[in-house]
Length: 384
Image 1 (cartoon, helix red, strand yellow):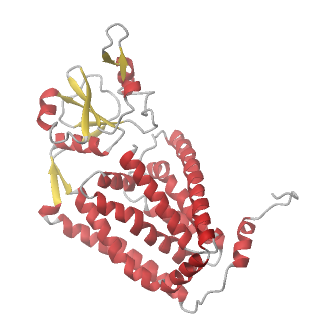
Image 2 (cartoon, helix red, strand yellow):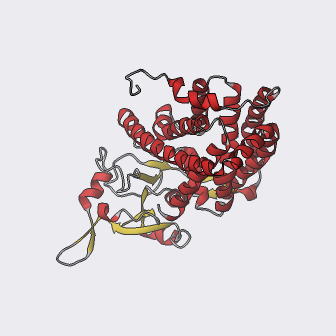
């Protein structure tokens, strides 16, 4: 509703942008948008599947973990993870995982293992005895955390507590609640291999998409260059939209988690990225996540999809839905996909809105996407 108490239609939000939008040379463009989508599907899903299957047949690209190593591997890649291990087993593996996993205390003969970057457990699990000044376990809090119906489900930062347990592992008697059960041995692709494949797929994708959308890219780049000052302001405003979107998606995720009885967590896609960033594939994953991914995704989900759909409103919802959907492959259930992946749907909507508000100039959402991913990676590597 505006200042005159008149109801504003959805399309009216963008009428000024539509009015200002310049006419582009577009006789064959609709075909190119369609071809770009086809190239994306063929390489991202068909060729990628072939590459993953081929890599799975090469022993040098794989690694086998026994049950104990699986526990350490999961804790090393999960900031919210916790596990228990007897002293003898811990001593065998502690040097191998010294840079990623730490024992923060011993309780009933079991080491309490956490991710080495988890520095927010102390107030929750430890207490200083006022008489002896010795640090002790908060037994009541620990028992609550491990119970069938825990009320302590998150660390101080809001990261969900995930308890890992080996299927044949000896565990404390008080461990009664829901755990992530691990069974070994397991052979899988190395984290470096996953990062390398992800990088290779984007490298294969980019030339074809750039070629098909060359006219649009050149037009948008020239327009951005001519309005350099406005471009940087648009990027800053766009990132503010992203921050608001993150706040909104956080509330939505919490609301959905309460409905489905699930703790908010990371998507499978996010877990793979975080794991790669903390491995020897860090550089490849950084290039993919900060540069290649944003360029490819914005050209496909904004430029191509909006180019095929005349209505801004329809294109906005379609692109947001598809953008969210492709980031949720591998989720265990629809409920988990909704709870953990709502941020992708919201971000898809925000990027689409930024694209429309900037007269369908793709350079702005690309720059905002790059900035957003860069800041997220800096937070993962140096703050969390």
